[in-house]
Image (cartoon, rainbow, N blue to C red; front, side, top):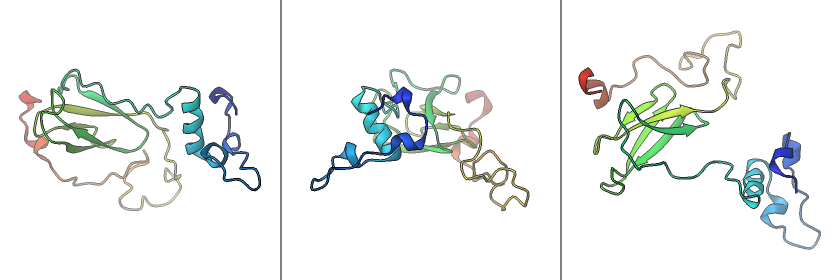
Length: 159
């Protein structure tokens, strides 16, 4: 098994497979990103940073709680401040709308995009129309007339 710092391509994430006549283990048969995660765990590395958010404070508009994401959109479950003071309220932060506020406790969360700068599906500038909903080439699905939420009605002095 290679150390994580020696993995350079997808080929390095191909498993050896099980020996004939046996049932392969997860390590022997896992491929791709699943194999990367298993190999990381075996070396004591949390590849996907699955630790819970630091909720020792409540996020504010000036200092929101940062939520890292490789994707264009991230779901966040707010349980209040201090933790578990209300039922889970699911919020959605996106690259188009990175800041969301919990309607129950007022906690503020901000998406910090850490993924690639180009779209993985090559839908950037590819020489023909923008396919309607793909309004720009940042990899997110922007559109005009995004529905308003209660956050749009908060007076500027309270933001």
